[in-house]
Structure formats: structure tokens, C-alpha cells
Amino acid sequence: MKTQSMHGALYKETIGICQQVFRSLFFAFSYRMRLTYRTDRGTVDPNAANSEGVEMGRNDLDMVASAEDSIARFRDAIDQRRAQAHRNLYSEFVGCWMKSPASMVQTPGFATNGMSVAEVITDHFAGASGEKDEAELLSIIAAVAKQQDAIGERARKVIDRIAMAHADFHADDAM
Image (tube, rainbow, N blue to C red; front, side, top):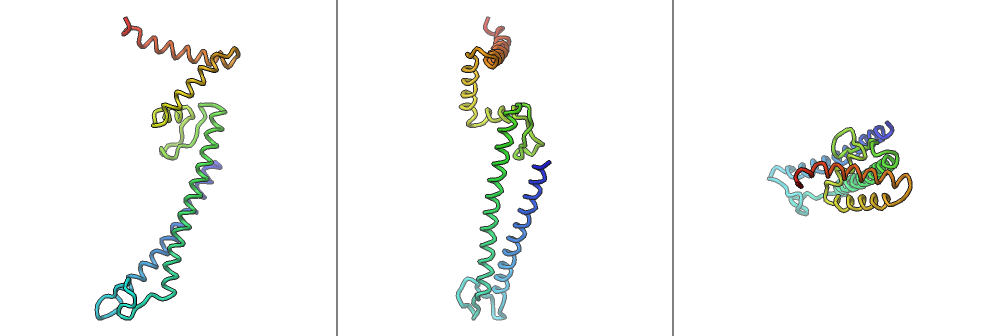
């Protein structure tokens, strides 16, 4: 709930900044359009200095600068929101993984209501950098399985289940 309300607030703030940027751009654009059609003797090139006696004044330059500042503020706000979302998603994932691989985490990039940590890891293994991480995780499980404690026993049972499934699947083809 807290995360959803935070995302709602970020969304509303982002929309407000977008509206401010578009308003500034609209005013700057509409002013340049008025410059283009200002005289009865033809059109005025707004890019030419003092064309047909029309020149951008200080207020006009301030309006353009304001639009540029709005765009820069918008980009900064988006960068800050992305960094905050990254921190939140990272913390949530690590915390849920430590609690249980069946814990649900947000997956806004998939437009779903979330996935379990195990599903996210499976998806990661299927990705470009997943093979290296999968091999590392399997090496850790093998190292833990050599320990003579309860955690080592659990690791050996996982290896046993996977080895049994492998042998069951391939036994007929091996004859």
C-alpha cells in the first residue's frame, strides 16, 4: 500500500512538471508563430535578426530560457524519480529474497501485479547476463553441499532432486 501511494504521488508530481514544461513550450512556440505572420508585407523569418524591423526582445528571450529551464528541471526530476524507484525496487528485492523466494516483488516493467523472487531469478537466468550468475549460484550451492550441517544437507537434497529429474528424463535415451 505504501509503495502504491508513493508511486501515485510521484506520478502526480511528474504530470505537474510535464504540464509546466508543455505550457512553457507552447507559449514559446506560439510567440514564434506570431512573429512569422506579423506583417502585411509577407512573412517574417523569426530566426533572422531584425528582419522586417522585428527583433526578439528581452521578454521573448526570457520566455525561451524559461522553457529550456523547465525542460532541464523535468529531466532532473525524471532522473531523481528513476534513482528513487531503483533504490526502492532493489531494497524490496533483497529483503524479499532474504525472507523467502516465494515472496512477491513489484515488476513494473512487465506491467503485471508482480512476480515471486524465484520467478524474477528464473527470468534473469534466461537473460543476457544470466548464465554467468546461474553458474555462480550453482557453484555456491555445490560448496554449501560439502558442509556437514543442516544447510549443507538442504543443498545436497536440492542437488539430489535435480540429479534424479535429469536421470529420469534421459535414462531411456541413454540405453
